[in-house]
Image (cartoon, rainbow, N blue to C red):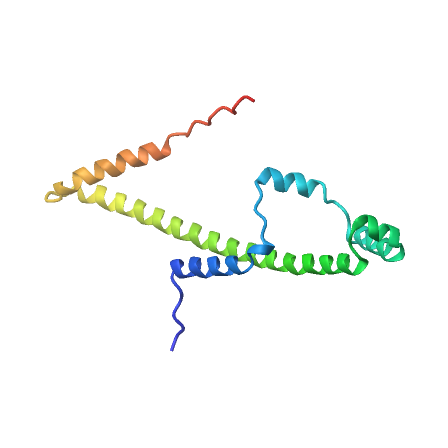
Length: 156
């Protein structure tokens, strides 16, 4: 027997359950905060390893930093493990986004086909009841085709 697929609502519920379990390991930032912090963390793994070695070699450095070499190495390992989680989440998000794009494309094709069939049916007598919905679809399609005006950037 085939395994029942979860509904989108069940998936959201599961994701929220996982999020509540890892709440202490999650930090929320604005895109600007992430960009600023990322721009200040351009050190290579070698630089971090050298810093960890310096902490291990000098009690004074360790005292100034407030972490042992082992604690720094543990933080590096934890970061690497969370990078794997991040990659899997990005891949899953990409898959969900791609599937939704395919569904929206399918819906657009259906809408185009319905418009074309309705237009053809209106040419034949007995289908006058479709005139109102056809005119509504035609108006909506024309609105969609109009170029959207961009808002000017706000002055600071």
